[in-house]
Image: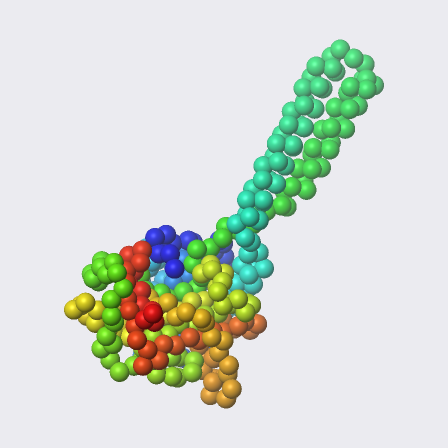
Length: 310
């Protein structure tokens, strides 16, 4: 997973940035706050007597991109707008090849329109003063000019596909931290707590990853996911203590989550709601590294990454 650049959302709906009042309808439990610029998710806040207005900035710059445009995902109106935007993003996602194809098509259209209009104007200018009003040259020039105007009107509605994301639509992954040790070569990881709990299955583990996407492609690139969220328990590596949540995990083959019980379904629905997903036809993955998994860790692109020992 690359970490050197943060890709902004292809389109941030203005309605989300302008929400400034508390909705009459809110989730009855804490939800994450979403950075509208890069999709980074802050942990759900603990319930308190004071409920800050939903949809306003929560204060402080995003640790990933530095923007301060936060959205409280408890707000049901914001959720509706966000769902519409997610549907747009999913329907209009394009490959890099399609993106360059779009640029090429737009460039060709501009050249054709500009060149045709210029040619028509030149012909009119040069021939109108020398030939009669019914000259074939003038008729041809007018036809060419009208054709370029019609083509320009058609191209007006042709938009470029959005650029391919480098990160999921929404994500919570460890960020580069210069305070952590640099480990250029894989080293043994020693867990410093018994376990953490996977949010969907409730299984004890040393690390987990939750993924959300619209198909079953478990190996899809990061930018094709609707959500990627990870957690790694505290551990010790090469004599350094690494706190919980400060490292990323490479889980290997991802596993589809199968909600078999009512409790599983309830956990799934709450998990999705806390992260701003409702009414989606999505595939949910939960992959865990169990407490007996042997781990190694190394620094990659400024981030400490742990994985199963080979």
